[in-house]
Image 1 (cartoon, rainbow, N blue to C red):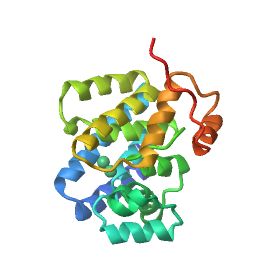
Image 2: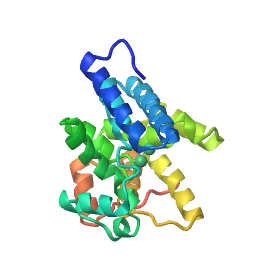
Image 3: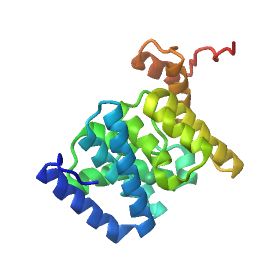
Image 4: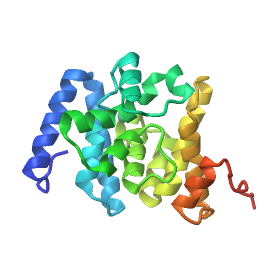
Amino acid sequence: MPDSRMTDLDSKLRDRVLAWLQTQVPEARVRHVLGVEELAIALAETHHLDRQRAALAALMHDLAKYFKPQTLLGMAGQSGLQLDPVDRADPHLLHADVGAIVARQEFGVRDEDVLAAIANHTLGQPGMSALSCVVFLADTLESGRGDTAELNQLRQVSQQNLTKAVWMTCDYTFKHLLDKGRLIHPRALQTRNWFLQADLGRWSSPAAAAQSLSLGLLPDAPHSA
Ligand SMILES: [Fe+2]
Ligand SMILES: [Fe+2]
């Protein structure tokens, strides 16, 4: 949502992105994007992050949402992205990574944290930045997603603790995917495991955690008291 703290440049870029989206995606998707922008700004303010970067990443997160599977696979391949078999089976999942490519090519975004937040909005990433967490959470929890007790609880947790909110939101998404018999991308599972362990204080550092995960050396499962 535009506000008085936006610079002219931010405001012009916002207008350009919205005009572009209006030609590429249905009206309902534009409303979703605006909902993600609103929640991302609120979360950025709560967690003392840059609200403009959160707004920009949120506005651009679904740029590639309606690209055809062959286009997504082609652009991902050209950019050197490592494809998982799940990406080939369900190329739609690539719209997040491809969205970051579009943000760079079409809108000249160079801020690596903003680009990463766009790329991470669907599957997350182990050890991802707070800005990425905010956009990841806003995508699932924006007001247009519904008003269930579960969503409202996740919204509350996201205001209090980004780390906890990320793994809980992954679990929420997994439940829906399992109910529908859909594939679960290994990167989403790695994200969930990383943030669960980080929430429990089991990682000594993000780098150590990432290395443990890439080597398949998951720490002990959390013990229930
Ligand atoms: Fe998306
Ligand atoms: Fe989205």
